[in-house]
Image (cartoon, rainbow, N blue to C red; front, side):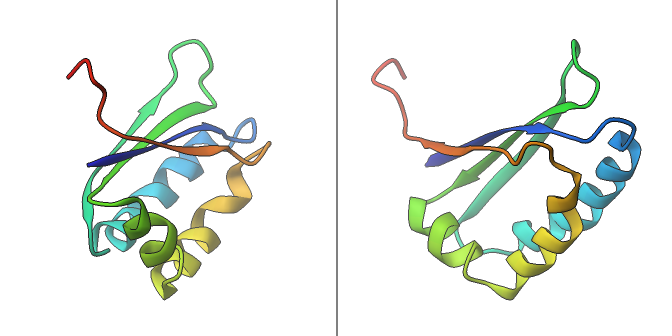
Amino acid sequence: MILEAALLSVKPGRADAFEAAMRKARPLIAASPGFGGIEVRRCVERPDGYLLLVWWETLEDHTEGFRGSERYQEWRGLLHDFYDPFPIVEHFEPSFLG
C-alpha cells in the first residue's frame, strides 16, 4: 500500500469548522477505488495543525483516480479554503524496515 501524508495548517480560529467539513468530506474519499483508510490527527503543540494520512492500493488510485473524480471536486470545495499555506502532499511506500 501507498501512504499519502500531508501536514495541514488550518487558518487560525477555523479548526472546528475544518473538523466539521472533514467529517462531511470523509465519505467522498472513502468511496474511491483503491482507498484503504484515512486518519486525521490534530497536533498537540499547534491546535490549528493536522496530520492527514490516507492509504491507497496504488499511487495512481490517488493521483489519477481520486484527483480525477467528481468526488475530488467536492472534497476540494469543502476543504481547500481552510489551508494556509496549502499543504505539500507526499506519498510513501513500505519501508525495508517493515
